[in-house]
Image (cartoon, rainbow, N blue to C red):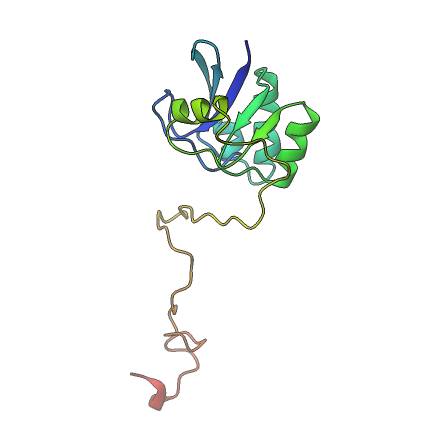
Length: 155
C-alpha cells in the first residue's frame, strides 16, 4: 500500500488538483490500492506569510505519503520533500482521482527539479484578480491627480 498525497481545492476525489503546493487548500492522502483517502487541512500553512511550502511538506511527510502530486512545487518545498523521501510529481491536473490514475498509469513523470518561472495570479485583499498593471490614479503619467499636475495636464 502506497500513499499518494495530492494538493486539492476540495475535500473529495472529484475536487480539482490545486496547482499551488504550499498554499493549496487541502491535501488528500490517497491509498493507491483502493482509493480510500484522508484529508489534511492546509489552513495553517496557507495563511503563513512565508514558509508555507516547507510547512506543507512537513504535513505531507508526517501523513506518510511516499508521492506528492501537485501543479507546482517551489524550490524550498521541493528540497524538504526530497529530504523526507517523498517523490515529487508536478504538472498534475484534473480531479484528484484523475491525477492519481494518471500517475499510476505513468502519464505524469517524477519531477527532477522544482518548478521555475511559474506566476500565479491570486486574489488580493480586495478580492480582485488583477496583476496591478493598470495606469493607476495618475492616468499612467506617474502622478496622482491633484498633485503635481499643471492646469494644462488636467483632462
